[in-house]
Image (cartoon, rainbow, N blue to C red):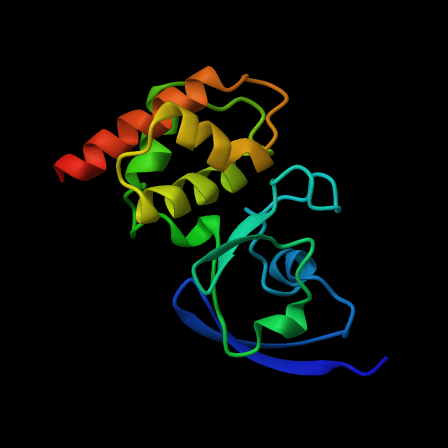
Amino acid sequence: MKNTHIATKVNGDGVEFTCEPDETLLEVLRNRLGLTGTKEGCGTGDCGACSVLVNGRLVCSCLVLAVETQGAEVSTIEGMASGDGLHILQQTFIDHAALQCGICTPGILIAAKALLDKNPSPTDSELRFWLAGNLCRCTGYDKIISAVQAAAAKMRAA
């Protein structure tokens, strides 16, 4: 197969890379760009650990071909924090002990941010529905829901 040259933006920065036509965005992020915050959990789009935003749309990066990101804006967990300061969602997850092993955490944070960007005041039901594609095997979901709701309140107040 012939490598393809891609020019895109990742976390606001212009990047260029070459990839195989069948290489996933997840593989490129981790193996070519060194952005290892996005995790591979299942490789089939069932767990949400690899969730990223492509042009503002929440996607499983294991299901997106890297060549599809030509000219796109990709946002990963590495782009959530601002300088040395954590995003409110990240800090609230720590404050509420809403994480343990950390495999699912980046995907859940990206999904939660995508929801709060669209709906800054979700109900618990809306939040649970939105995060249903993200599986956590360690914490259960109550602490995660509590943390996202607390972050939403802080973000609305800011």
